[in-house]
Length: 114
Length: 114
Image (cartoon, rainbow over all chains, first blue to last red; front, side, top):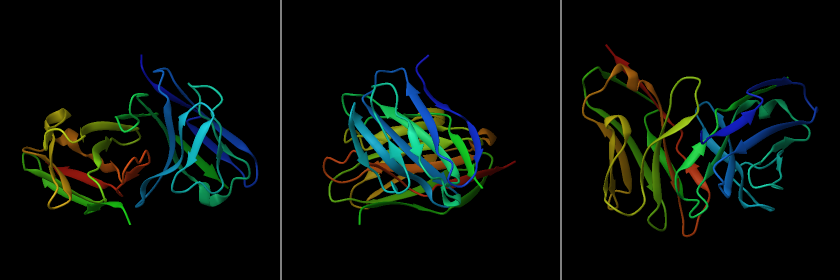
């Protein structure tokens, strides 16, 4: 089944404790992206990647890092999480022919930083 | 600034009534436009998309949207609301020439009254 998976689905952590949220897709997509969703703000793009070893900042990259060492994986790293990073995070991927095609979203990761 | 604006954070309709969710965009070039739906505690699912072909786009679950360049709008409609349509709806767009950054509106929560 074609899908985008994220782990963990739920995470409660404390300020300053480094964490990684994994994202993996099995559709051979080149484009992958991370978003955060906050009430009243919709979804905002954090980082995106056009291909392996190619990443770009989105609208809200501060406090986040990403890496794209393999085509299928695009982990999101919070090196020193803070309470304002409490949010619902989505990973997405889309066709390698044109990234402006449909993006397929993962199920989301709900992160709480205490 | 290039943006996506959804008018109305909450919309209530009676079952069987017309659904109209509004989306306007600001872009220097014709954008790629999307409507996504998010059911409670789920990820985002594509309803429909506009990519410069037909201006009237039909999507899943009986939804459609019309691209109106003169009004910079891409409103989502459904002739007859069903209880199962209750969800949050997001308009999104790739704005600007060669943009690979997806910009979302803030979302409209649709309630369907029996």
